[in-house]
Length: 102
Image 1 (cartoon, rainbow, N blue to C red):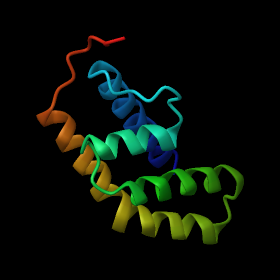
Image 2 (cartoon, rainbow, N blue to C red; image 1 turned 60 degrees about the horizontal axis):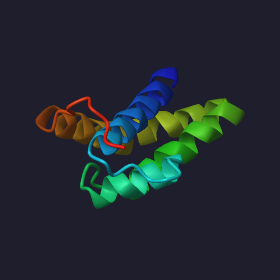
Image 3 (cartoon, rainbow, N blue to C red; image 1 turned 90 degrees about the horizontal axis):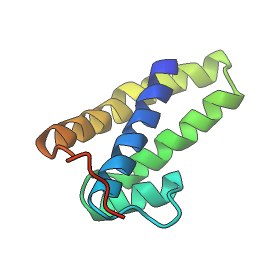
Image 4 (cartoon, one colour; image 1 turned 60 degrees about the vertical axis):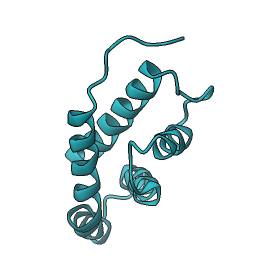
């Protein structure tokens, strides 16, 4: 589950960096605002899954019961990994220049 949290955080950071480099970073770059901007720019394909990932990440920080972990693993395999792979593929196809526009 640590890897899932890391992957979600890394995905958000990559989206944020890409949005900043292209001049589309929200004024207040909260995770929901970054996800909304990424969805509008077609960086991500299902904003609801990303919001669910954020919710699951927060839940796991508070509750590490076996039932919660089992549900998280099932959701990770069936919903989250495919969406993370889509983001990875998009980022490979659209490399960020590294220069941020202000």
